[in-house]
Amino acid sequence: MKKLLVLTAAAALSFSTFAATEGKPFSTTELRAMDCPTLSVEQANAKRELAAAEKNIANINANAQAPGKAISKWAGVAGGALAAFGGNSEKTAKASQIANNIAGEDDTSDVNNLSVQEAVKAKAQTNIDNIATYQKSKKCKI
Image (cartoon, rainbow, N blue to C red; front, side, top):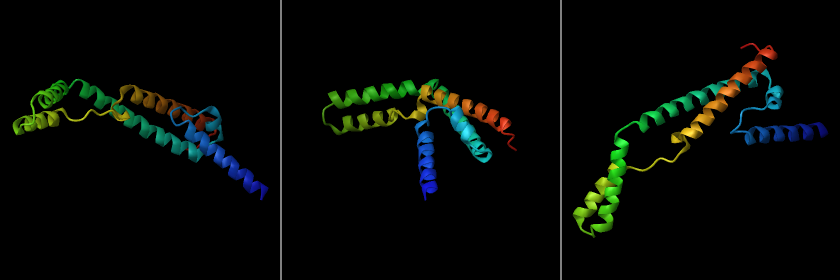
């Protein structure tokens, strides 16, 4: 019974440690504790994370150079001005609605945050490199 309690406590601590380091690369202690199959799974996860971050960075860079972004900002400003100064007429309301539709909503998610995506990319690349080192030292069959 004591063994079961100790193992349960150890598992709970290890899971909380992995969850707490979500934004950081795996520590050497965590990597040392992983067996070969776990290292392989984590390496595959890191590769997917790296690919997603690279895709997001490419999208961010492409959208930053798109001329439509400046137009949409001005359309949003125009929509706000029409709403503020135009009164309650139907024509003003329709023009304001069209301008706001062109402007769209600003995306403030992490997917479009360049610094967050670069940090995710760096973490994923670090994990891939470190996991490969541990797989080699543990003589894992890949």
